[in-house]
Image 1 (tube, rainbow, N blue to C red):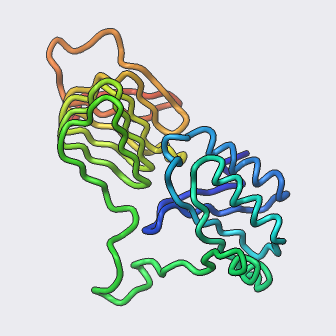
Image 2 (cartoon, helix red, strand yellow):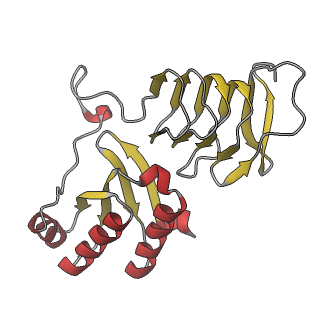
Amino acid sequence: MITESVAIKGIRQGLLVTLRKGEWSCLLAALEAHLTENPTFFSGGRMAVDVGDRCLMPSQIEAMRSLAAHHEVELWAVVSSNEETQAEARGAGLVTELAPTRAHQPPGEGDEPADRALVRQGTLRSGQTVRHPGHVVIIGDVNPGAEVVAGGSVVVWGRLRGLVHAGVLGDELAVICALDLAPTQLRIGGHFSRSPEERWSRPVPEKASVVDGRIVAVAWPGE
């Protein structure tokens, strides 16, 4: 399965793609499936790829770069424990070591955690998109035609009328909360739903989550 062969998470420098065990061609196909499934999330981003101890030829590294570029993603780093792969990656102008995470840095040093929430203040209008590998908080409305795409959960402190996709990298524990939840389309992980035809007589805060394989919205708080 795609989720078993390719893992994607947010880091400070963009996205980290980890290629697990499997045939090289199958792994590239799985990576392309991820990029194709969520073009809004990946397009314009940058990614590092951890290939483990694989020994890659220049043509294989170039194939990854071309695949990423086709989906408007910049491949900027190839991480490997294999010295030959490291040398080939450096020869291709790629970084081979990532900055240490905050957990491995002395107190007071380094950047903020990669999974910190992105907070955006103001109305998100039609045609605008917010995407982030972690959680997203919108202080304002999300109008019809606007999109929010997040690797984590999404909280809208206002009216949600646009498209929202939480847990875009496969996190089905992500939730979507809004003071007035009436999206044109709502997705969590691989599940999707539309705003129900029956609405509360008056808008109430709601939280949507995946329950028994489907998206369910309940009053928030008040479970």
